[in-house]
Length: 127
Image (cartoon, rainbow, N blue to C red):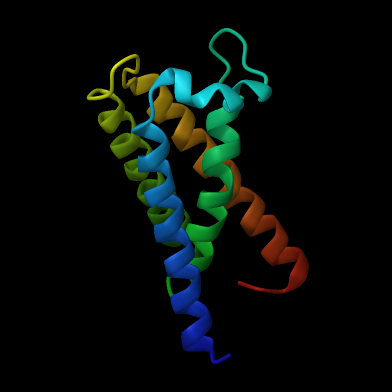
C-alpha cells in the first residue's frame, strides 16, 4: 500500500469514528444499555475518555504533515469539535441531553490520546 493510500485510509477511519459518534448520540438511553458495562461514577466520565482518546491519537497521526505543537492543538481541536457535535445531536434525542462538561471530557480524552501518540512516536522514532 502506498503512503498516500495509507494516509487516506487513516482519514477514512477517523471520519468513520466521527460518524459512529453521531450514530451513538442519536440513540435513546434505553438503546445504550450495553454502555453500562463501562464503569462511571459521579462526574468522572471514563466512557468519554475511552471514546475520544483513540480518536485523538488517530487525528494526530492523520495530521502528520504539521509540526508537533500545531499538530497536537489541531488534533485536540478536531476531536473536541466532534465531541461537541455529538453532544449537540443528543439535544434532539428523547431521554438524552447534551452537556458542555461532556465536551470537556471529550477534550480530555483527545488530549490523552494525542499525548499517548506523541510518547509512542518518540519511543518508536516516528515524528
